[in-house]
Amino acid sequence: MTDPIKLDIMSDPICPWCYIGKTHLDKALAAHPGHPFQIEWHPFQLNPDMPREGMDRRAYLEGKFGGKEGALRAYAPVVQHAEAAGLTIDFEGMQRTPNTLDAHRLIHWAGIEQRQTEAVDALFQAYFVEARDIGDHDVLADIADSIGMDAAVVRKLLQSDADAEDIRTRDAHSRQMGVKSVPTFILASQHAVPGAQPPELWAKVIAELTQAA
Image (cartoon, rainbow, N blue to C red; front, top):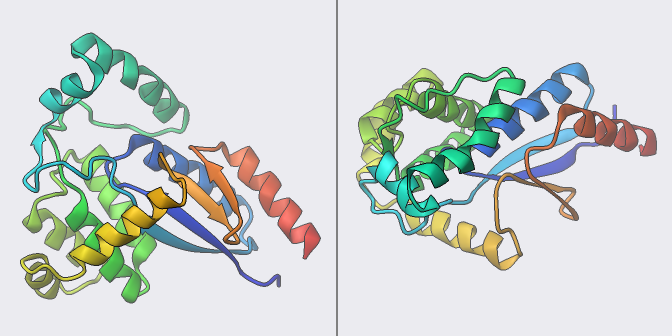
């Protein structure tokens, strides 16, 4: 049994590359059940200036990528890589781009209960597969309930400012450390691995770490 190696992951629940990247990592971890990773998820908002209520997704994408054609061009590789990873994303059904501060607060609270990865999975499922608005408190409370958390407590926390400043500070810290996009994986607090890397790369990393141990 090798000693655990910390794998810190900067991610955002509305980032399709983060969803794809996690799917690739999961595939490698499932193939190597003796892997040494101890995983922790960290907040990084793709849109920190997004209004708290979110905005219409089409308007957001067309504004960001310079019109409908630009948005379609930008998302073509996402669709291609998602399909290759075996994922179905309901882009048509997704009506809103949410502010993800509250989703990150849920991930943080889930971490206290050792349910962090379950929360990340449930948020990806809700947003990309079910096209739900994960900025909505009812949706977040429902997600909390689905992974065994107390929905009433989560709802009460969401209605407060609990841990909001902590999430913003951690997000800002990642940017100060040079993280510019997500997903970004940090191995053993030393090596940054940016982007949605294929399972083969993770398999190689796991093999090298196991051999070194």
